[in-house]
Amino acid sequence: MHAALLLLTLTLPAADEPKLPPKPATAKDALQPFNVLVGSWKGSGAPEGTKEERAAGVWTETDAWSWQFKGDDAWLALAVEKGKHYTSGELRYTPTKDEARYTLKLTTPAKTTATFAGTLKDKVLTLDRTDPAGEDQRLVVTLLHHNRHLVRLEARPAASAVAFTKQWQIGATKEGVPFAEVAKGPECIVSGGVGTMKVTYKGKDYWVCCTGCRDAFKDDPEKFLKEAAAAAKKP
Image (cartoon, rainbow, N blue to C red; front, side, top):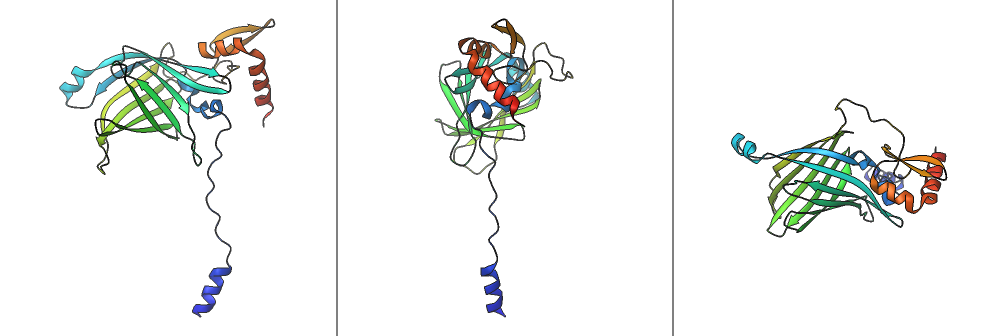
């Protein structure tokens, strides 16, 4: 009986291993989920702590995201006005062999940099780093809506198994856009996002979503027209 069961087990076909989702072909493709960030945002931040500590530590900032291009590479640039923790940043696609990963490099008011890396799942970008001072830090960006997102920093002692605890959080709303408004408008010829400004080429008007896309289109309009035409043919 046991021999028969063993023989049956050996002859059964092996279960298929779960397949990983295909990785995006280009950095621009991989960064498409973050098209909603492009534009200017009004952020309101507060530290974690008592009611009094939160009230005393409240700050406001303006965040502006835009596309940047160099050759076939693409990334998103962040400029922060009156930021308490960061003044600028770059979000890039940095895949590994097995998964799509992203890296966010942030510059602090003291001109130092902090680089976080991680993955995107269900509109939540989770990025980790270990601070030189001996602290594990986790930055969580939650894309709630096309005109609303949250940024949260969590921390714990380095190499420990304790849970992360929230340090501060920023709630951001897109400037000039009512909260309940549905994203709509012409498509950006460069990124595929919502176009907000016109550019003209050979007497024809096209739309772009930010100054980065505007500059890239002006530098090489034929490249982006070909890419847009190819994308339109895809099922």
